[in-house]
Image (cartoon, rainbow, N blue to C red; front, top):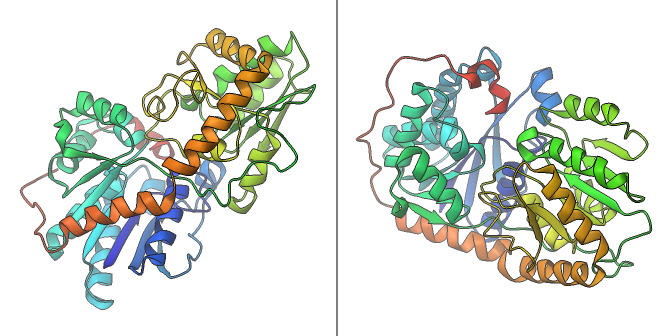
Length: 409
């Protein structure tokens, strides 16, 4: 098959979407498919500082086309960027040989662009609903609501990472549950492996808690600092906050306010090739997220053999189960998080069990070859069919918080 993959964010952007796209593309190539990726990227100082940015790197065997999000950078003009994506997809289809299917990552703006290209070309499409796509997009303004309703109602297929996330999207937009095909995320178990010289669940006399991912209050990182302040007053303890994001300055300020500068290491950006070593440095992985589609960082921590403390959040509860492969706290509750961390640190047998079970599940349930096979099955169901063109997202462009802060979309 010849596949056009439309990415919202790809490396060097720090995002679970980058991880997902990179692994999927490599597996598609390994399976013998022809793949073209059209990827948006931020080239401005703000975009680079918040997420990382710049043109996407080469991916072996993939034709990579980077499109700078000039409209997004100019007052949140997402419509301008959608037009650029459509023009690029159509040109590639006509000049490089026809696509069999267009797969967009994120419903808006990339999903809407894929559907517009499908309407022009008569090529089927499918859309992966990921992250903030289902949590926030469409509740912000009428313009984005119309766009999401068009995608959710008329894409050839909708892929989503978990049943709880699908239920949230249904609640937000009224999408029939049967529209979704639940296919979880996956992890490269050859890259993310446990440290050789540490037993499962083993911690040092001064344990290192690890937060790795987007530094964003919606990921619970500020809640983690409050919980850590409580625990570090009781025992020797360290915390590493790895990553960049919109709330990196807020984290730095909060660390200073709490007087934790000698106990918290703000690691900042880590290039993709260095990420496995970041996980191996940690002893307990903490991700107190408010909501997920399906978390790449959780799978990477599981595959590294780390005991995990997270939350009872949408998109987490299918992957992590309290006292079976992780400990789960209440969303947004620093006291609850501190209590579960305290329990994890105090119970060696529990840590060993949770780390071992998480590692086992990462290796058996979430391998990329198996997950990619399921996605390719969806492609095959669509190839040769005509796209649904009976949709419209037309209407006035309304004020929206994501036009004021488009880097958060």
